[in-house]
Image (cartoon, rainbow, N blue to C red; front, side):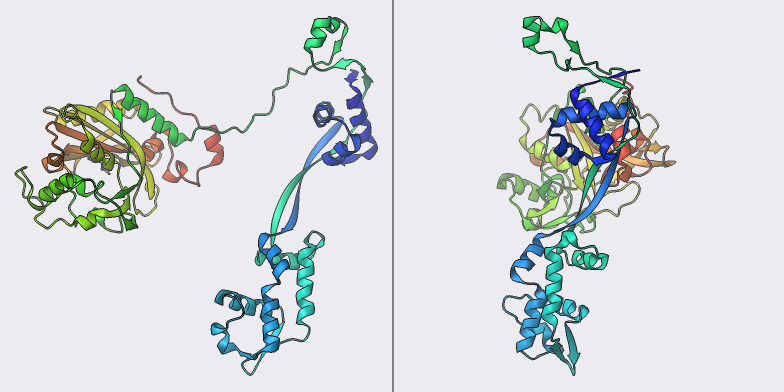
Length: 494
Ligand code: PHE
């Protein structure tokens, strides 16, 4: 079949044919045609197997910022050797040596370089500079300045190691002529229909270039929502559908919010450095009215009938900044803000990052996500909590769960939920929950009963996506192909 070529198609064809092989850059420069048109011609020629395209990766080296400074101000070994030429320096004096504005590090660096490059020798403990040191150093400088022409890999490696140069890469497209084409040049092979052509009616007599519509374009690598984010949206939707309102709290907290505010004693193991990330500074606490009530409930139980922790509550310890270790901090910040109505009845949730000083394994990361929630209502009990757990996880499509009693300093009773992870062949905790203790509610004047929980989102994601390792879900070890191709299972119940 005869192909229809435009003038540009023919030019590109002729040019590649006469050159046999040519780079894209050269082609553009030589032809002086519009780049997009050349590209279109190349596609046509490629599609008809008249030419082939190769992509070549070219490595090259460029002087770095450090290198530029060295060229301008001289290499460290130059300053060092110049100094040695005029001063007697013993090896033992090296560590206290002061040369102009050299730092101690520069001195030992310069010594190392000078020694490796035979610019100095050591005679009876004294550093002696070689006569031809300037010549040797200038050679390094010359190489640095003309790095594009240097081909000796040893020289390149030495400069790279000193960070004086940087390795760069570029790709180059090249086209090779394959075989002659059977074509005719169609002069008025118009590409685009314009309003001018339409208005004048000229379009009726024009021969338009044919479009190839049978071929699909190559799939594009576009950004996608991260699979973990999908689970977060999914859980968030679920909460909103169930009538919960959203609450938030900062990552950096005074110990007060994730610990003291909820009756966690100041000597509780959760406060240990192994479990919580501490920051060096202290933060500010809410007003004295609240801290006073918290002190009272910790020290003697306040009016709750409890004896409290029987110690002196230390306000300074509560100011210490930490990375929040659970989103229950958001719950207690919300307790502090509730209206009188809400103190009797309300539902809130929060989804966010939490931080724990954990050893990393297949189900633990030091940074992960919690989906927190609480319900305040009259007469709420463990039975309601278990009812909620069953409904919530069923909605998420997770039905193979076990519920077992546990202990939390701020809830009584407390239960943990385990789900069977078929990918790991074992049960893993996906939720911790309970009914808040009176000691943790009284300072906020909450009259209703409160059920609450925290859900580990990465574990839910492992279940939903059938992954064996938490690092397959979150973090830089996630498989990029999976991130691009994963499918989210449909929700079972709306
Ligand atoms: N804060 C608990 C955790 O980190 C979860 C929880 C929240 C438990 C509320 C009981 C009540 O696992």
